[in-house]
Length: 235
Image (cartoon, rainbow, N blue to C red; front, side, top):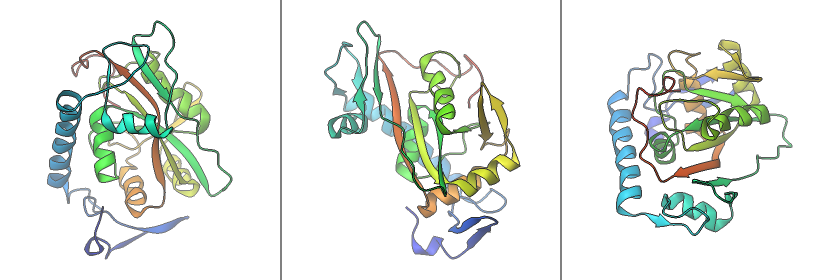
């Protein structure tokens, strides 16, 4: 999503292959804020349009629940499987974790709401909207991330989706050296300003195409999202 004119400055990270810096992120974190704000607004509008103007009904055990079209497409392609149980009040869709053979790569997981994922899907970077912006590594990290959808942990950003990122192991080691903490048996890094401030490095790697992301869990309820200020602060 970044043209060649945006790729003139190369950032060198010790232990990590050099990547092209995204235009929206300079060393001071100032350049591109207006562009991010505009993109975030478009992402939120896209979510509202998908839910209200172009709903896709999904034949499942839960009546009256709508899927976003891009999620419907993942189900139809077999990338997500319906695991909804009898009597459930929500649609549950899941995919297996990525099996890795390359020791240079690892996986991290992040729970996020519709607007954050829409921004990621459109821009291929994460928005600067969450104060902590947790990522957690490996299967223990996935279990922890899923707690936000399964009701074991509460947050005010109304998470509906767990996203898996296949990333350079050296980058994650660098981020965890900058900041990490134990989260119910998983080790997390906070990409945001109240965490380890690793968002710029993470996004630069995302923008360069060094790693990939995909949805591995979706929970879709037929309810109005909880307003901000309920539950724990946004993560």
